[in-house]
Amino acid sequence: MRDAAGSIYDLGYQGYAGPRLGRRHAAWTMYVHSMRLIFGIGRPFSSKIAPWLLLGATYMPAVVQVGVSSISNSEDIELIKPEEYYKYIQIVLAIFVAVIAPELAGRDQRSRTLSLYFSRALSREDYALAKYFALVTALLALTLGPQLLMFIGNGVALDDLGGYAEDQWNDIPAAAASAILISALFSGVALAISSQTSRRAYSTIAIVALLVVSSVIAISMVESLEGNAGRYSILISPLQLADGLTFWFFGATDQPEEPTAVADIWGGAYALVAAAVSVVCALIVVHRYRTIDA
Amino acid sequence: MQSQAPSPDAPLIRTKSLTRRYGSVLALDSLDLELEPGVIGLVGANGAGKSTLIKLLLGLLAPSGGSAEVLGFDTAKQGPELRQYIGYMPEHDCLPGDVSATEFVSHMAQVSGLPAGPARERTAETLRHVGLFEERYREIKGYSTGMKQRVKLAQALVHDPKLMLLDEPTNGLDPQGRNDMLDLVQRIGTDFGVPIILSSHLLGEIERVCDHLVEIAGGRLIRSEPMAELTSVTELLVVEVDGDNSGLRARLRQAGLSVTSESNRLLVSSDNGDGADDVRDLVRDAVVELDLGLVRLEQRRKHLEEIFQPIPVRDGADDA
Image 1 (tube, rainbow over the protein chains, first blue to last red):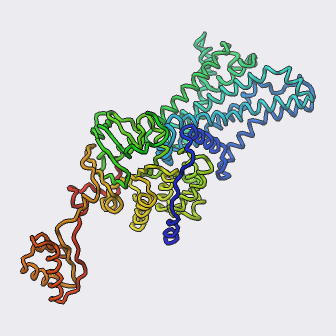
Image 2 (image 1 turned 90 degrees about the vertical axis):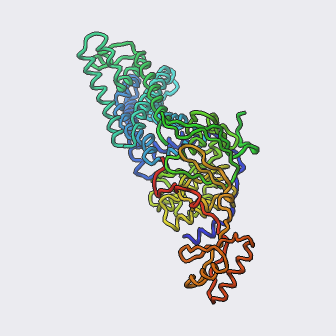
Image 3 (image 1 turned 180 degrees about the horizontal axis):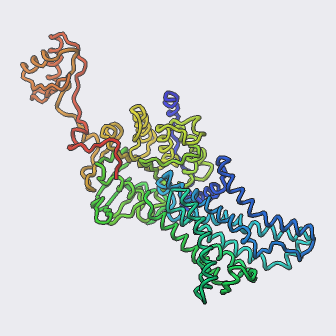
């Protein structure tokens, strides 16, 4: 190898006089790279299994509903309502971010590539935000994607997509708003945790535990505590926030026995708290990368 | 002025009272430095402030006081713009395992600002320059230390930087690997014409490839001088002959020369008032008369090791 190397070195060096696209291009490259990382694109098959299985799982309720619609051919049979959609898939979303976030923010600390990134044409903040927005975008494929499939599928099954769309038009902004907020919330919580350590197993367990435990605590507080303290304690759980804000955007309420119905607080509070938590978590991620030693 | 391209008139590096504190610790103390393009050796003991200086020059650390300008960019305010034109090779491991060198270096080129097409082309070319061939399509985790060091060098070179900062590039390499890496560094610095700052704790390496030397200790600048001045010619002649040299030593002393022994060599002072040529003639005649084989007769140059006292060397240690 060495002799071959010696002779090849002599090919001569070419400078680069072409465009240098700077910080924006560097940040965009990071964003695209992170998206590829999330779905295992350009990586071994083993890296693709988890994301694609989980992605597929989030579409199952939509597929079932579209099947029912096409068999019954009636607008009235709504087995799975759009405002209830995330109740079916919230655990899949939780597992998805718990598995993927440590790959995005955590693995870079393990392999110590940060020094190479931070010595290039982007800032530490750009790097952190590119990862955050990549995960939000990826999650939209698991949140908004199934809603859109169900919407279009229902219309097509009824042989009247135009009419269905006209009747149900309000569902679109409600689905979009809830999907965006839930994606931002779950991404924020997961990355805020995973960016603290390079140990993937710890992050994954911590993320699942936080999402599940906070939900259990919130439900028991809603049921046991008296007055506003009990009712508003439902806001400590990201999973309950997801439910509450979705019902609010769709102008609906959950079944009487369900936690958000029991708490019975103003629905906008779920959306506001979810937005605030998303922003705070994104800032935690940025702060982590701003101060991490590299 | 904020600018997007390196300023051709600006010095490579100019720092003014550059200071960096970590809490109460003064890592860099009011450094005034101006450097022109070349291959610049940066030496200093562990904790002398080398790594701090490199991070300040990269715009990764904000100065606590003073300022630093690199290629005409203000490092504190124009970090991302500046870093489009800088290649940095850290001392530690920094490569992901599960991607190929081709994929990784091309990605790195894009994060430095190159469009995808040129990034790919230059990746292929750069990996060839550093001596990575078929293996560049394999996952990095299977690479030897030497190959990994070449990938690290490639990612610092791929975007045609106007300054490369190399932090202990021979770390962890065997003697042959060190040799190859130094050849590469020298080639990049002289043949490719890319200015380099080479941080090393091995003075021999610095002496071999650098044309300028910067020494810092305790966060202060000790010297910044062209290598030629540091390793200038001395007034000693080195004489080495086949076999026993004691006869020759006696003969030269008889002739009134000051002679000392150094292992199997004789060091002869050429400063006897008559000029070095006469001394050479004397040595030649003496060797002929004694029927010895002359192996070496040369003017001795200073080595960096002799200049540095105490020698700031501790092999294999991390620089804080």
